[in-house]
Length: 152
Image 1 (cartoon, rainbow, N blue to C red):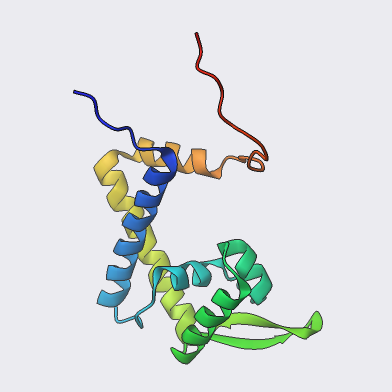
Image 2: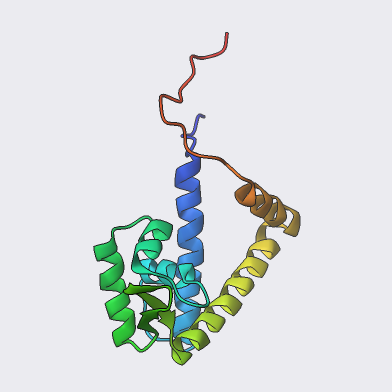
């Protein structure tokens, strides 16, 4: 019997969804305002002292318009606010509100709990190896063809 081998991007996507679904469930159980996975990504990409919309777009890999939409939703939910950027008259920083900081702490505890649960399921060594591989510098993605002819 031959099975279809799933590729690494697919496996990484499934792993990400596992964490997102667990995090969303934990936040909902903890009474945190409903958020979407892209909003969680944006929230996690914020620096403690605030981050510009352009930098958030770069970090999350989406357009500035998409970041603006998420920011406005999270501002309306009372989790984020926009403040003047002390280093630039033209820019504003996106920062967590007091409620946003509390939600971020709840999310951090939930992610820690999910990591412990994963270690219980697949082993602490496997989680440590996964973390090590993902934290290693991968360099820039290849610019040209990456396939090689089969080895003989």
